[in-house]
Length: 132
Length: 464
Image 1 (tube, rainbow over the protein chains, first blue to last red):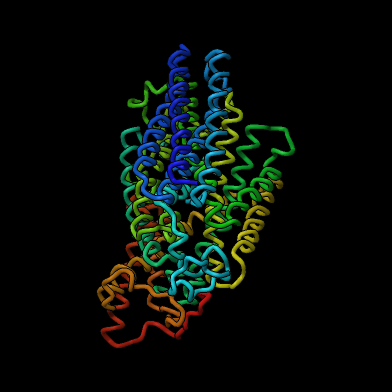
Image 2 (cartoon, helix red, strand yellow; image 1 turned 90 degrees about the horizontal axis):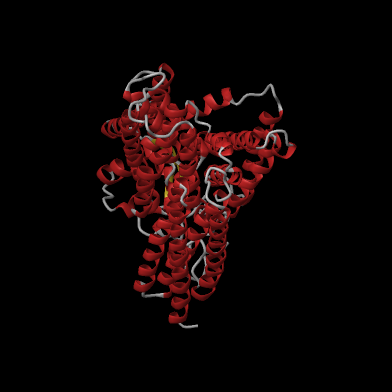
């Protein structure tokens, strides 16, 4: 397994995170509910910025260890946000439509499962510890 | 346990009998990134109790004064934690091993067991476990599984598991829980305030019981002082000596104030600091569960972890078993209080808070020893040469000057706390008095040629 292959997979996951973060932010704006707009932005914007930082770190990584460290740290953080987002999404405090919540829920599940796979894939490919 | 194939020849001289490098320096191959240290530290402060602690400020200060008090208190905590964390970063050893120079080997046992295992490892662990039971019971009343006693049992055992794994366990949980937990906490505070009319009157609302600014600074420092003096327990895993200090400082100046001020705002605007009930009322059932479970878990595993580290400085047992033992004791006590309607945590809580006000005396002595005595009186200017724990190194069995300075600092700190004087926190008095006492005692003993240490202990490869 070459370094380029590992890098490519981590970039794909971070790119997906970036895309889904954009979708969440856009859903919030489109929801028409003030609380939902703020809440979705609180999740979408930091994750979007995090993904951009992650992509920059991966691009600059010169070794397997640096690559693995960047990948594993960003995957953990993405999963953490996804769990919190999923747990708050059904709250009646946010009065967005069921359709908006449903699409956001699917996005959150993607943000939970893909980095979870990426975590173990990066661990296997680079040998960097999950508690790096 | 061997030190691994990547260990240097110097590291190969050690034998890790306790596991998790509890009594020996952490080898370079096991060191972690600054972000890892940041999240583990943040895991300690990510707890509902921190929001409750902020609630105290909301009763005594306006918003502006509260921000100032928290800011000044956080700076004090940042300085203390950075100083102790750097020692851990340089030596790669826990707080209790590091204190062998300042208190002597046997002195470090007494200090570690009496001040850390008792307060943090058992006391705070039991209190946070009981609090977990209370919160869970408020969310789901009338269900046996979520009654205070039963929830304390499964909650306490859950919290013990990651601490048993060791530092790896703390790291995994912190990475997974901490970022999301802060999102939950911010949304929870927002929901609670929003339901009570919003943030509109924040700048004009006056507190119910106004007090001088110093009282707020005292409360802020008291909330996290126990964490600030044992930062070496985490910083020993730092790749560079200053990484632990930097990670500590960043989290204590950003995340800690966020929670404390958030708790203060809750009380100022709503009159209640019960974020769990407010979130449940806003229909955030699953979210509030995660807030309670993940928050108490990331904090309490650190509590029992540090308590077990202190015990590992004394005996050769596996640290995982020590952690399990302490976890069971703490869980049993929390469950007992939860099951007995006559029981109360108040006397015990007051006891561990009082101990918390004298704890900094311990940090004061070893800060003075590492930053003043070793470089300027013993000529060890290079930080890496100040403390040596390699096999064959000779250490004092007891450092009488350190013990006396500890007693002096703790007495003054305890007295200031007892009298509730509106001056700097008892914790700060304890720290300053212990530093000065230690330096005066050492200088006086050297001037009149009286030895201030007794006995000699030769370090074994096990670190004991």
